[in-house]
Amino acid sequence: MPKETKAPLFHISKRGAIPWQKALLIRAIAIIISLIVCGIITTIFTGLNPFNVYGAMFTGAFGTPRKLWILGQEIAILLAVALALTPAFRMRFWNLGGEGQILIGGLATAACMILLGNKLPNGVLIPLMIISAIVAGAVWALIPAIFKARWNTNETLFTLMMNYVATQLVAYFVIIWEVPKGSGKIGIINQSTEAGWLPQIGTYKYLLNILIVAVMTVLMYVYLKYSKQGYEISVVGESQNTARYVGIKVERVIIRTMLISGAICGFTGLLLVGGTDHTITTTIAGGRGFTAVMVAWLAKFNPVVMILASFLLVFMSRGSGEISTSFGLNHSFGDILTGIILFFIIGSEFFINYKLMNNRRES
Image 1 (cartoon, helix red, strand yellow):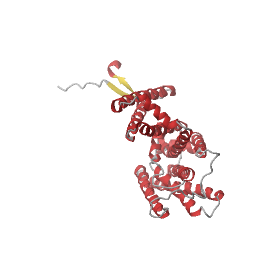
Image 2 (tube, rainbow, N blue to C red):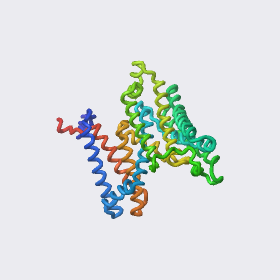
Image 3 (tube, rainbow, N blue to C red):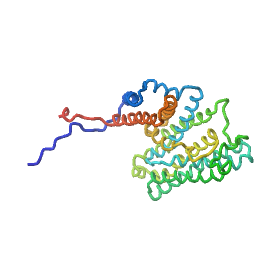
Image 4 (cartoon, rainbow, N blue to C red):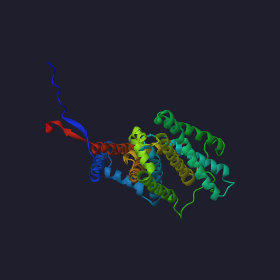
């Protein structure tokens, strides 16, 4: 006699579209639960009052005007990278090469500052830096785009490997340009003349970067939502066969979109080298090319929502650093709390997109 197969108690079914208020409520509940879990873990392993720990996180992000400006700058740079990756992701082209594209854009910027800084006025040098950074980033993204469009190579691995090549290129030129020789670093470029430094608005060091990225956010939102090219990106992302059927040239869309993605990453490298750090190192991108992937996914590729996602990640990063300083804890503890909060936020997406059904109740 064949054994009876018992039906599972629950099954998972995909939800239809739910109101944004309900989705926001689910995310808010996830954050509250994550804070409770973090508080329990903090009490058990450190004996600290979790409210004091959370207070330190806010102090780390908002404690002084300087911290506020640094927070805004970090949000702007992370948001810029997320904006760069979004068109490619909407097209289902998994561009994991943002890190390398930033480095190449920064390298092109540094080359202009070092080689031409004492030969050209800023009015000519800075536009040349902008063009060089944009072109360098676009070309770096164009290479995997061509291989994907022509030979359907794996863009994830290709763009990932391009990061390592970019890192080694930067390392090579850092040794060539190092000051002083043998130091292994370039130091502040044109510190005495400030040639190639992006202009400062009043006394606010980071305001220009923040304003530029704010404009980029609006332009990207309009581009993706209202332009013909944005529509083509969405269609290609849904189905390349459908796109070809309606007359969209998929290969052209892939190459064009990756040119835009790489150009914005290259421009971000310019903001870092010319506007913030005034130097070039192999770590100047700071992992933002990968963190921006999470920002884009959390925001569902919506440029406006990415502002909130960028704020969340930067706030937790700044806050975890303050925890380590204020309480003498290992920096890894702050990262653990950050990981727990992100785990619950990302996990809440499951309950937004799916629901658990009770089989017995249905029967």
